[in-house]
Amino acid sequence: MLQLADVCKAYRIGAQTVRALDGITVTLTGGEFVSVVGPSGSGKSTLLHLLGALDRPDSGSIRFRGTEIGDLNDDHQSEFRRRSVGFVFQFFNLLPTMAAWENVAVPKLLDGARMSKVKSRALELLALVGLADRAEHRPSELSGGQAQRVAVARALMMDPPLVLADEPTGNLDTKTGAAIMALLNDIAHQQSRSVVMVTHNVAAASSTDRVITLTDGRIHSDVPAAEEHR
Image 1 (cartoon, helix red, strand yellow):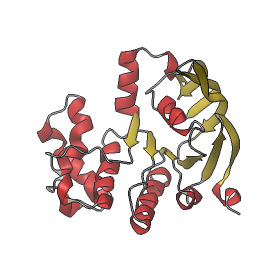
Image 2: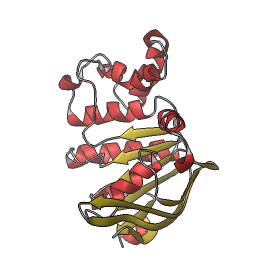
Image 3: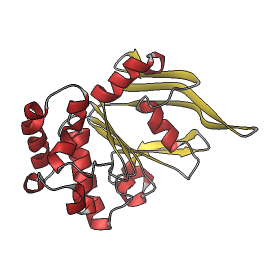
Image 4: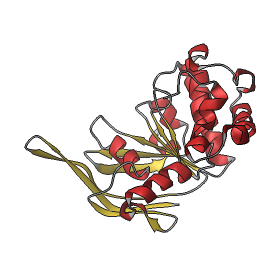
């Protein structure tokens, strides 16, 4: 699904050039849950931003189903993000004045659909993540775990083949975080999506299929999770 070849990305910080990614080559497939780990500054967030077309590489290739996403113009990158990528963030990013189902429906609304046409799909997704009985609740009426489940449902609204999760368990207790991990596993394995998660949580990474460890912008290791945590 996703092929990265010799991807490099550098940033200027004052007079210094920081090479955030330095020759990343990796292939990601559908039906696979991949975690990306490494110390702060290793390039994890930069990699996630490039996969989601939130930024462009300085050099190298990022191909999604045969299309070079780094070469897309701004409008086409925006369309790629909207239709092909579901984002799950650490801080949920739910709209406080909207009910849970309305938050789930937001991607379709931004795509031009009418609220009345998308409510049934939003309710289906809330049921999928175990929140059918919280559809009318606003974010302030939800627990952290429930809010993150709403965020996961929202990420699936456009039926994207790629789901990118940035520290999705970072604000959750251990039990709730484990439940979110189980949900992301189901999304990868039962729905044949490619799920890529950036995390500092070793326990979370151990429950994925594959662990990519970055160090100083390079891939230090890329192994099945069972081998990483022996």
